[in-house]
Length: 195
Image (cartoon, rainbow, N blue to C red; front, side):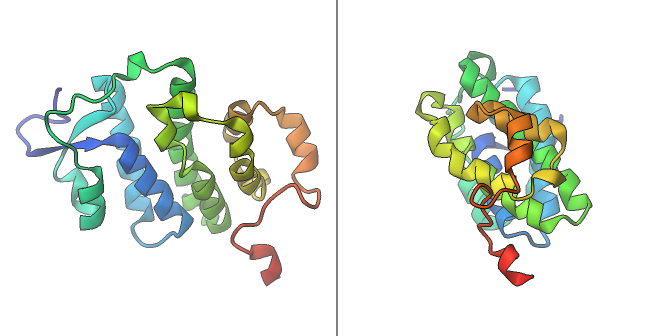
């Protein structure tokens, strides 16, 4: 396993645990949300470079995360992890959704689109758990989470919309027509009752 940078103290981490923790932070955003998103996006650069879900990150990168998260994402240094290149096609698709989702959340955060950040964070938070065991992913069960993202559909980029549709086997043009219909989109955080 190669290090992210030379001559720095590094910590081996589970990138999927970091993704999970990041998406949880997006569900309930606060001052650290932007830092988590930035760290996750930088982690994906290392993940692709090292072809492993277990990667070493400079300790300086991990200063932005809390002690609980550090404990959750640290791994046993002898764990070689899963090779990214050995993931089945569905695992690769889920991994790509996580990467795209992190970038989309960062974009939405920069626009101060908090409702969209919360909804998309909710939608994405279970995905990291399925990357290693993609055969357990059930698109029909994920439809609930998909409908949570549909609540902020117009704020999502077309690329994010398409990636979410691909995961559940939906046609984006049909979702475009349905996302505003009563009973389709799910306002899980109760924003529509606040107007």
